[in-house]
Image (tube, rainbow, N blue to C red; front, side, top):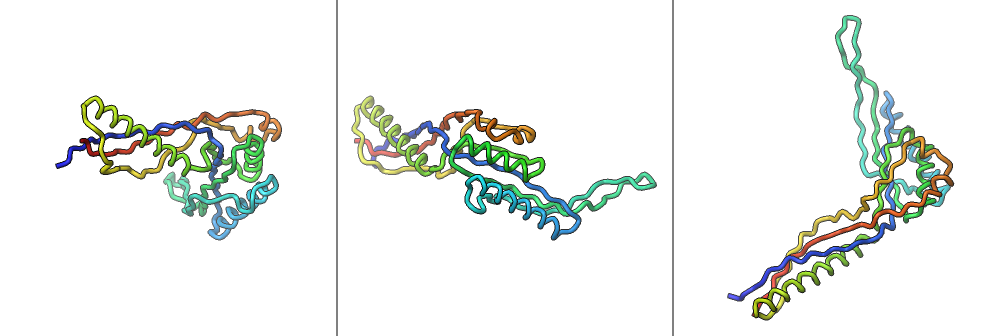
Length: 219
């Protein structure tokens, strides 16, 4: 039976964010089902047009989740008893728009969103456009780390590192997002665009790590 050495290699890299994702919620309520859907569609259409005016491509706003549900309210009747009263159909969208990181475009986008979505629930994330390149660099780093560890262990043990026998890797999705928390209240988003654009921000670098297990023959 061949003798082997098993080593877990760890890759660590740090990258600068170059991409922005604005996520937002849209809600429309009406007692008529078709009207609720129409209200939501009109809001999205107006938002797309507003973003087009500042340089986005047609239909840049994408839907990530969508659901329609009924809403009820509890109302007390003349006898003091509570009963459920139908309020309408609630049409809920979770939307996103993505673009290359640019402070001015970010300010313009937030301004447009605040005008066409009442009380928008917004979250802003900073990431990288080419996630595949980050994955590749990370795996290379892990492979180099593992082989260095294996070579050190073999040298210290008086044996030679042989052929690579097996590689075990869990292909999970990496969290390639900056920890920078960028948040503006609704009133702040209605500030003049130039004022927002003058606020220079540099999102914190994204620190990513991953691991791979390697098995080598030892001689």
